[in-house]
Image (cartoon, rainbow, N blue to C red; front, side, top):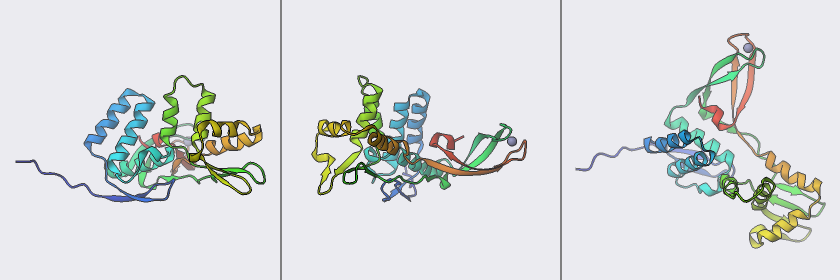
Length: 233
Ligand SMILES: [Zn+2]
């Protein structure tokens, strides 16, 4: 006789980069196992892949290849809140006396910092519309060991261009080759190129608000804890 199957509850979340609402289920022991193996390896690539695999299993409507870093951070915090528990205890240093304080983080409160404008005006007529690079865009270029770091940044920039516009026309990046797009980017002046770099540097991040009083000196903190890995004790 077949063993009984357990029902898992379903919840909703909004994918931060697209605003699309999707359903998810908590992750289970089989996924926790994937995560533990990846963490044990201490390898960034395996860790990123494990997070994407877990999200893929738990949020079937999401195309993980399109997820940005901040989507992954946000979605994983939501999954973990329903899988392991809503609160985790983190250790933070007091700004005033540097004493370590144990503070509870509510993973349900994890939010995303403001999304930057995806339109970059290069000249009064010409500009770019960017999309947020996906986590896969980053891991793909990291796998290309033959590329220099400069080439890797270029590759991410090129793959993040959605379209280019001038006074009359909109040129969809999909309809153009990588070489054409590279040539366009290489024809920019330093100042214009900096605008693109600024866009990539201002990627949103997952954060959670922390309010606590230092147990040593009594200093009051009202701060934002950023970066997913810092949310878990
Ligand atoms: Zn203190």
